[in-house]
Length: 307
Image (cartoon, rainbow, N blue to C red):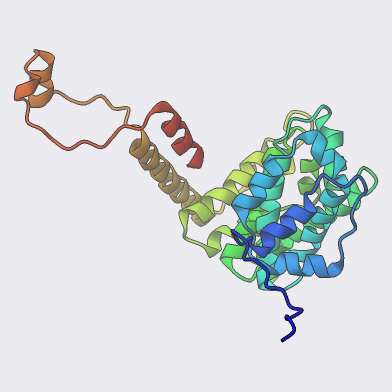
């Protein structure tokens, strides 16, 4: 009997999720030449659920010079994501928004020699920055105003916060002054189909994040020109919206306080029978009680970083 020409392949020791393998292809620094990825690659890329931790780790492992070396791939990713978020495909739209949030958060935090020019080089290239960022600002405004769900609209707000906070010392934030986000966040316009993000939700974090974004935008270059967001906030008189913002901020502050106390309670313990006996050297007579273990400084630092 002749041996079978088929050979059994050994099982891999671990299975790599498909999206992780796409990240590996996209962020590879081994090739000296730029790779032009096909439409099929990007279609699959945005149909898969993003692995935020893997994406963050892969980008975090590349320094600023490394990003400049693969600027062509970075520019493709940014442009494709911007065009995807208004495609009308809910799954792909949210995947693009989640990808952009992590991408901007990590890329803009790098230490560049010349931040303004090098960030633009990584994201769009100097020649195309106006076209791409005007499309980006328009797309974000459209999703915030008329996204399919409040969760999708929240993701668009998070992308805008990532860009505004990360590129605050550059000229990129000015594109949000050309495309006014205030009406879609705070004040409905005259059209019957226009929406106001804050009035459409009662979740505290959904209220906190858009006002945080407005606060960043209102303070951008406020001493160099008349900031339109600052003028809008000074003239705003929507009492119901203001009440929701106050309640939302209060709820978020309470949650933040509770999370802080859960990690490190810094309030001095009052005098009790146990503490008194321990103070005078009779701790052996103190009643035993269960106590929550106190994390060491490194654990405390990691816990605060996750808040």
